[in-house]
Structure formats: structure tokens, C-alpha cells
Length: 128
Image 1: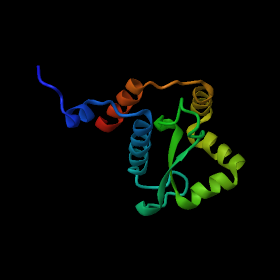
Image 2: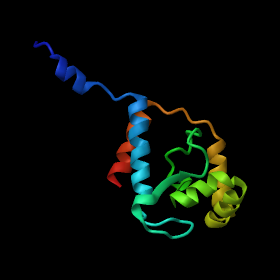
Image 3: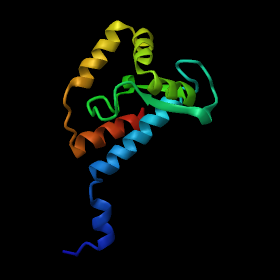
């Protein structure tokens, strides 16, 4: 039996929830921005495109749900935060009443993510 060295132990350790959440945020942002244009105004300057959550990132049940994240330019994203009621009305018309209501239901649900859940979701997002 050989003793495992420090390097091997570090390599075998599971990533923390914080690390996985950060990687998921980055993966979702890249996927959404790869659309290549703002969903609202159609602007296509990639350097100004951002991933904008419909329901807050604090709602973990939909934080990495691609239906909860829109590709918006910086201007439209700023406007969304400055005028949330108008933005919500636009989102409802953009998604349609049914999809919007389904997303709202999922957003209101409580989701406790395990490290394995987060890892599996990350793997799914990266390979798609």
C-alpha cells in the first residue's frame, strides 16, 4: 500500500459549492451571450452583451435555468433594473403568458443543491 501524496489528495477532492456555483454562473453567461444579440433591441456588439436574469440569481431554483436568463445589451439590462415593472411586462410578452407563469412557479420553489447536483448540472451545460 502506498501513501497518497499531497498533490494526489488535492486532485481527488470534490470542488466546493462556491466553486461550482461560480463555474455554473460563467457557463450560463457564456451560453446565453453566445446568442450574439440583445433579445430586446437586437444589438449585436458582443462586448456589450450580458446575461440578465428574469428572476433574481438569489432564487437558486432558477439561477442556472436557461429559460430564466436573457441575453441583453448593457443598455437594455440597465433599463430592466431601472424600470422593473416595464421589464416584467416586456418579459411576459416575450416569453408568453404560459412560459412566464411556469417560470414564476419554478422561481418560487425552494431548491437545495448538493455538490453532486451542481456538478451534474455543470457537466450537462458544458457538453450541450
